[in-house]
Length: 457
Image 1 (tube, rainbow, N blue to C red):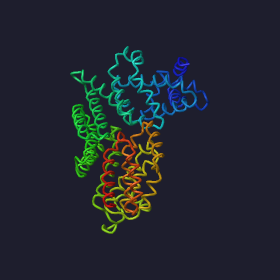
Image 2: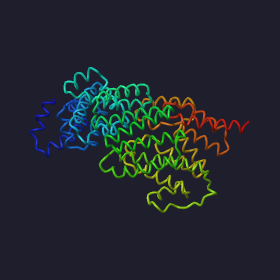
Image 3: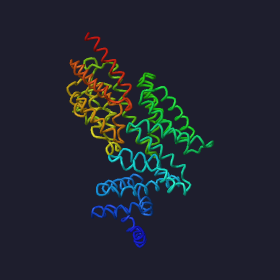
Image 4: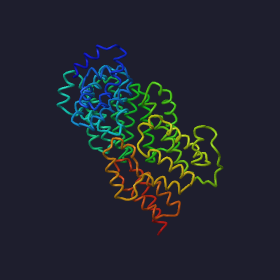
């Protein structure tokens, strides 16, 4: 069928070829011709030609959506699709394609609802037979390390930190054998050291994490990768902030400097554009901390209506009048609401924690309770089932630090004069596993529980 398709395509006009390459895949799927559609996706020339007429995001969207439909009908057809696409990705890397880079591929696939598609592709990088048959004959084996590092990133997101660390150390050792690394290899050093640092950050080893982050920053600078450098600077400072090695002002200063850099780079770098969303999230985090630290009281601050940003005014009916801290938080919250990437990839209930904390900042305890209750498991049994489910999800990164939500949920009940309910929720927070980034929040929960015990005694 593949050869017939190639001949058929070349017999058409350029305009007809464009239409076929864009839509033939889904015409076949709509007609129920699943095997024929799968056969197209294993045709190297079809994949190559389709990519030529589409941008990277549209190309990946089409392939992913077709994969999901094919998988529902016959999962046995998907292995060959993953294999062909991975060979295509390696070829683009070998050709130094500046649009379909490993970083872009990763960003476009790792957050998908069906993470199995990307998993299948990446697992091939650790399959010795597949590498021997498909990569070594083309002298492209050095590129395998790059995708193995992404496999480690996926493992880390799923909470499989031991496997992730083992893969990363193996990749690092392989890279270190080259005495004169090129720019691509320097970028990989930076990425691998970032992920190793992040693993130590997640399990509470902040000082080790910071050492890895510093190495990552150094390699990013050598590779002239300013976006990678400032992503790591942000996470390094967040790590230091959460583990009391830096203060909120230092964290905020780093975020604002990174925001200026990402704004400049966003036009040409999709990672920088996406990271503006993360900056907004972290600035919200800082603002909330400052509000709580300052002991905001609606009676102690002059409230006012937001007049600075028109889009923020739209959410005033929901949250009412606001203090300076809440104003800052609402601006970040509205930016997140408007973010195009989040509109596509945000997990269910992504915005609930932000809403709950805005209510906390306004001391609207009942609304905050309802908001937390709407998405957080309420019993140990429910929480354990929830954690088991998200542990198989490559988008699990969205649930890192879940203990923090139980920490704040408990604070709401404490403020509302219900200390026993607060203790019950804090106990649930301690159930959340350390390897999902809960170490700093476990510590804060224990401090509050000890304080409550002292007061109660």
